[in-house]
Image (cartoon, rainbow, N blue to C red):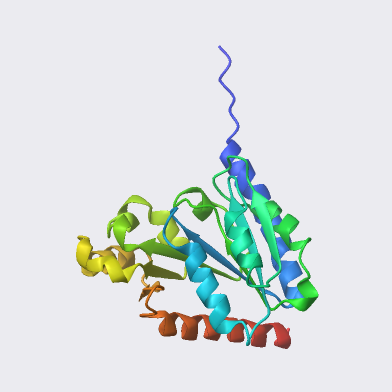
Length: 227
């Protein structure tokens, strides 16, 4: 009896995506643009966080935003209200962006007039972590109401990001969230991961995030000039 033949579609898809991601990186190098991929669960505060970052650093860098949602343009409208170039990607049910989708968005942006493009990925802790979109920096948001055990349940997300920004610290007294557990579990996966507790609502902790991100951006720009 003939053996069953199978094709690992996930492996094929990811391999193709890697090639697309390299094309994104090549374009970013050419245009000297910093691409920041922000991932999280729905409702973690990504949009509010991004708005605050743009308001804080808007005089220092020229920002653009790529919004990814299954449906609606609600978040994109908030970005446009800030006066920044914005592209809305509607995935129509897809739970993540890939590098090809990202390239589609970049091709519609005035790259020569931008320094930093922030990608607000689809709200999901699984799929976005699997797909390299060619970003210069990948970070994730984790809100206090989600709990401190997410690195155990969704380990890949915590290994592919450079920092986890713990949001909604202002409601921490009302939730059973143990920072020691979070830090211990994440260090087992990614010992270099930075952890920033913040409250965008009252500004607590945001100065540290802004300082770190500024260093990341400036360091990358120096490398681009060297190249």
